[in-house]
Image (cartoon, rainbow, N blue to C red):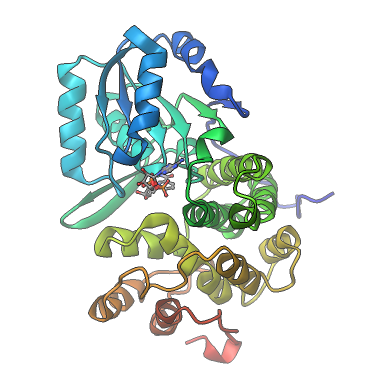
Length: 365
Ligand code: NAD
């Protein structure tokens, strides 16, 4: 039996959208929209995915009432306001989000107020389509929350839609999905089911990662990565988020760093800090990565994929590093201990892009 110690029992409480998975499954979109009964869709995309959104608009014909191609990272409130205006003047009765977490996040922000159903067709590995987590960014920073109403009703996973991702962006997005799995593995409310999903998610994503640069035209790794992203989103949806996400939300929401790449930079350093004391989560992670040193394994996977390796390269200014350390000091890890003075060391490591350090018990401050 590979599902950990069952003697203490567990609670699993999570809703899951209807999921259609497979290369070419976007052709089933019309039938899925019909099944849901929506007749006046708002198509939501980023500018970058406008051409796919336009193809889908043609495919769906009369069922599309309006389009909004202005979704942006971290869901700025002014973009939500603009999209709401478009949806209301077209009297929309549902949202079809085509794209990564930015398009899906905008649909969630709209649903939070309107309650209208979401169909999501992901084109990255963000996993947002599987979670009831919403985010909104204003001048005061990024707020996030959980609400069952924002969970997509139907998700169409067509791995072919990710084939246009530039290899470095694909790899960064896959590392973002690995981060979801890692957080699900060490969450205080992890349970045997979420751990199974998360471990398998890491395995699928780590097996796909080396192929993005080397064999970008092959389809197999896109399916593996999308399956891993699905498992990562599903496992994260059922547990609470930890230190890694708190740090990345701060870096994205307060300093405007790109989402997937921030996750890719931070993950090895956060794992290195969290891995003292070990535990079942670390054994699962080591098994999925086929390595006794998970933080270094992820660091190397990222370096091999040529994904940006430091907060400095991502554009964080040195004076903002000081502010980031101030924000991070009070954040707590998986055991409830605050980062405290370790925040400066951990963020400095991420800022310079050095290999993850071996924290020893003496270094626990
Ligand atoms: P994104 O949606 O912002 O996409 C990044 C860029 O890639 C955009 O310019 C987009 O146009 C382009 N792009 C997307 N798919 C493409 C494709 N197939 N080919 C070529 N270009 C493509 O990035 P993301 O990392 O998917 O999402 C980030 C956002 O999602 C953040 O705001 C983050 O907070 C949020 N998020 C939320 C959750 C959640 O559960 N709520 C989970 C993960 C991410």
